[in-house]
Length: 249
Ligand SMILES: NC(=O)c1ccc[n+]([C@@H]2O[C@H](COP(=O)([O-])OP(=O)(O)OC[C@H]3O[C@@H](n4cnc5c(N)ncnc54)[C@H](OP(=O)(O)O)[C@@H]3O)[C@@H](O)[C@H]2O)c1
Image (cartoon, rainbow, N blue to C red; front, side, top):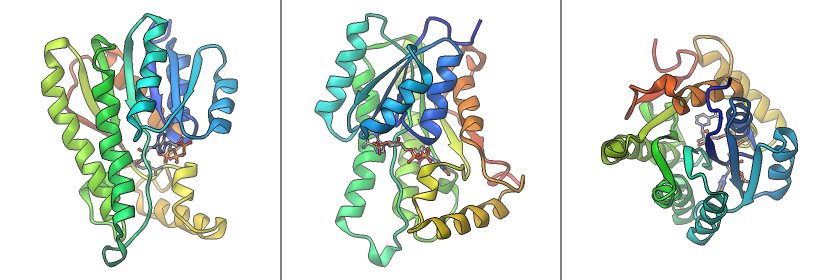
């Protein structure tokens, strides 16, 4: 028996990286997993990898009509929602003096606003005892250069998790943040302008991590499965660091 037999889960940004690994893991634990994202090719490949335990709905979490369509699809399955992993985010290096309105609005529009409405619009579907997991970042605790707007969006996410844990406790709904350190994903490599610089970035980040390497998406997914399941039944409002010790020692 898996940890999530008979449960229904949603992973936003489930077509790649940490979201994909989490969708695979939640399905392996017995859940039916809905995934969403903007790119059809990635979602189709994810469904092919996971099989009949996955349903893809194309959409943008910053578009409220797309969220309505997503939740209508989940509602029509008739089993509510037991696990929501609000994972979709975007990141970009931009130093303070070069921050534009567009950069600010895009990152806050997806990472903070999109996450809020992803969770708000899920509320009528969430079953009592559901688990909501937000994807944070170790960057909330440090001042990494040129990452100020991204880090601020993740600080908002961390704050949301505390508030929502309080607001939803009456329904037995737990809300936590999973906080990955640098993890080897297309999103991480995409921070660099080309593949050579991406390899340099990955090498540099690995040297910063006490365990001496980047995280693997599957290692973040293991923490997501834990937070999603009854194994974490007394944990809410928390942030679970999966960072190879980066922010700990
Ligand atoms: N990798 C790391 O080192 C690291 C560290 C700390 C935290 N994180 C967090 O982990 C999460 C996943 O990142 P990742 O590294 O796995 O990056 P990734 O491979 O780029 O995955 C991000 C996913 O989010 C989706 N997405 C982005 N904007 C979206 C939108 N507006 N609507 C719907 N889906 C959207 C993307 O799909 P589409 O482009 O197709 O929409 C993509 O599938 C993010 O929250 C990130 O901040 C990552």
